[in-house]
Image 1 (cartoon, rainbow, N blue to C red):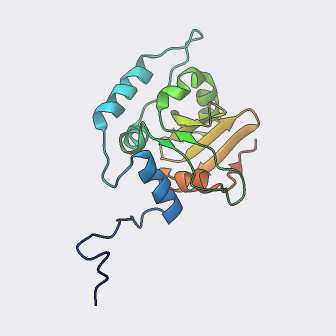
Image 2: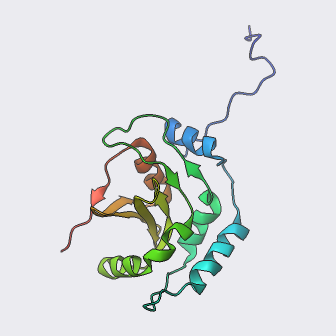
Image 3: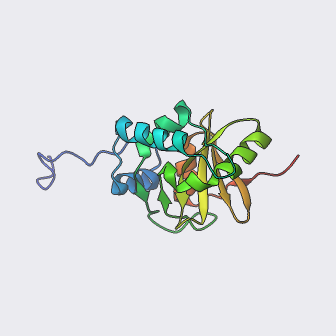
Length: 171
């Protein structure tokens, strides 16, 4: 016999793309599967392309960054609980948070033999998040440079669940 309290009411949808706590945090921030704001992403791309630091550094813009901005841009994500290994940070997906880190991103990209574009920030500017042309995600803070994940999905899982990212070391 069907439950009279749920009869006629669809079950809350959760995607299988993300673990439940990550999915919940993303949905609480306003994300839904299929979210795609390409106009906002292209606007950010224009801002980043036009920005030149006083020392002449420019930010890179490429498809992997624009796609991440289109799907997750503008979200302020708060972890639903304590982290598994470290305290999870709140996240703001907005590439303009990295606008003044052009030299840092260029230098790190050169050392990694890739290009980096800003993705957003952790906390209130404690770390800048960056994405490379292959879609890998990094975090740069005052303690060093960190590899967060091979793609945006894994990076969000790492950051939201408080998994410790891998520290990048010099060869």
